[in-house]
Length: 422
Image (cartoon, rainbow, N blue to C red; front, side, top):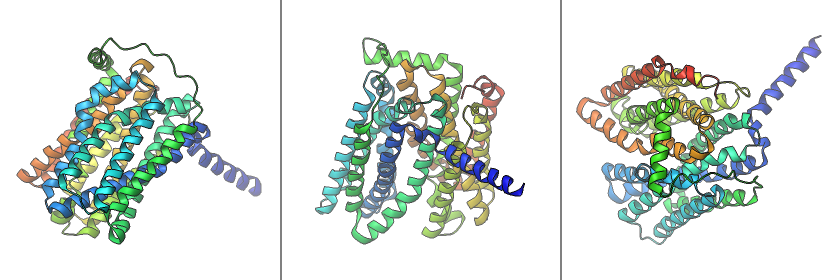
């Protein structure tokens, strides 16, 4: 009896572990996942190296903020039109082009640094160029997932695995970049990032995809197609509610990550080690959340968790502002990281399930604009609040507004309308 029970437990554990990676049974997604694993690590290496290079060249915190702003504002400015373009273009071909252009940008940075000719304005231009590339690349990647996954019920698992990979890269990339910068400088980080794009371009080339569904053009012009996409998203109550909630979280909550250096120094009275522990806690919480989502059963509804996860995130940011003990801060930061990554993944899954193929690229562009495009303005708002009222007060105000948005989302019963649709 005991032996049989033990065998059953082992079998159950193996079954659960294999279910965690069930989307990888799709050959195309497995190729994409492997290619992204290198590319995302390289991306995070470049982000750290770019920040370090800018600060080394300028010794100006405002210069760091400016580079971060121009690196993301392109997603906001081009997002509406990029979605229409994504809906009318072969996604694999578009992704090959975006990866090739991003690779070229990384090689330009590597060449400037390795030849001893880096300038702040050159880095600024490269950052802006990469932001424009991402305006097309990010919605195309998200829209492409549904074509790579053979079973529709594995879509949520595929999105969760992407979030897991993103969280792992966020932990590994900066650590590797730190060692590389200390040993040989920023140029090698840019060079390694450029080389990492070969992995995802190769993966895209090896895929055997079914014929793309024929989608009717949205309109005679890009502008009419964009207008049609905006009207579609607005008229769909569930989509409108999710995008509205994400905009609020991105404006007032998610910028807590940008404020980590200030929080580490002024509130916890620490230095780089304290900052590293805070960022590590954020990444660990995000990784735990992504793994939890990946392990959920096929067909399990996740739409009902949207207001719960946003409330957890908001409460964590408020707790971080009010409780100033280091160990408690690490716990709240980890909880905020958990809430942030899970709310993004769950909203992505629900939107992918709700939207029809004709408008997929445009709705996913709006999704990324709600996150990446709004983020620079959120950083400016929280930065202004921090200077005027203090970092803790700014975090408390931001967390409170996110909590109000979560309650409004809940009261409108949007979670009931999308319950069972994801």
